[in-house]
View 1: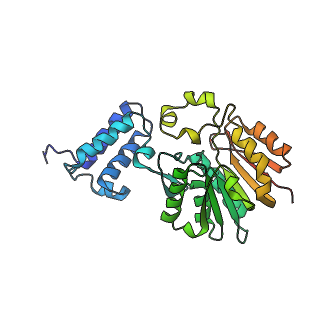
View 2 (view 1 turned 45 degrees about the horizontal axis):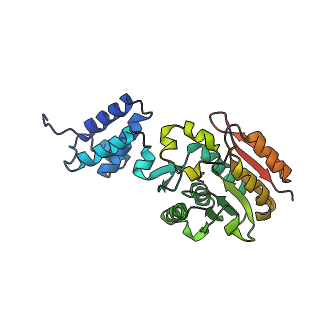
View 3 (view 1 turned 180 degrees about the vertical axis):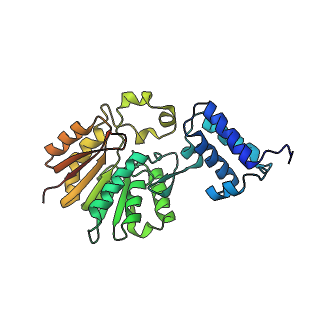
Amino acid sequence: MGSSVPSIGQTWRAIRDRLDTAGIPMAALDARLLVRHVLGLDATGLILSESDPVPGGKVSDLESLVARRLAGEPVARILSVQEFYGLDFRLNPATLIPRPETEMLVDFSIEHLKSHPAPSVADLGTGTGCILLAVLANLPKASGVSVDISADALDQAQANAEALGLADRFGARHGSWFEPLGEEKFDLIVSNPPYIASATIETLEPGVKSFDPMAALDGGPDGLAPYRIISAQARAHLVRGGVLALEIGFDQGHMVNELLSSEGFCDIAIAKDLAGHDRMVTARVPK
Ligand code: GLN
């Protein structure tokens, strides 16, 4: 009472107000996450500690993280962790921050494979491994491999597999697209490839453009380069009746549909995300 040391509750609200004034969306959530991270508190712990003072040594740690958030760095990048499909995925500078819209690939994969006795899945350009690992976490009989051209990204996917207790059903393959897969065939291939046209990367919001790895965003001159490679080579790595599920940009459905149908895929379907944008293409290898 009357102490000049601010309480934990006063501190996170003051941070919220500073972030909000700076125009940062979800200022309250970000403020709580930063305070929890520095003080080592879970969500309940923060509520129970509202009236405790902030330990003196933590004030400057917290201030430096707030400064990074005010400079536009996403909170997931500052904390090196992002929740995706209810699981925590650790990040490093080589990995994209998992996006909520990518969860629809996981929903589709689980639904498609749930009655399969022992499904195999390949995730191309795996980053944190979020898509494959969320599928494995929900399908106890499934196994899969993560492919990435970045060794650093693949190390992070491996670490996430271990942290989630999924390493025994998971393999990490270093290389470009199908290159490290040899002759292997899968029941399902998933990918959220880089799909931004090189020239438009400049127009992305600062938190993406400056803090996500360029290799995870840049899809070549028209943003479709990865889809050309995947559509041309996926059939050789899918069983008969096997399925491909790809995340796409909001305006790429038509072109990706054309690429897949010219390679002989059937049952091609485009699904919209919660915002009503085309976000996923699925296709099947004829039986
Ligand atoms: N598969 C990872 C994700 O969806 C990485 C995607 C990417 O780097 N383009 O988050």
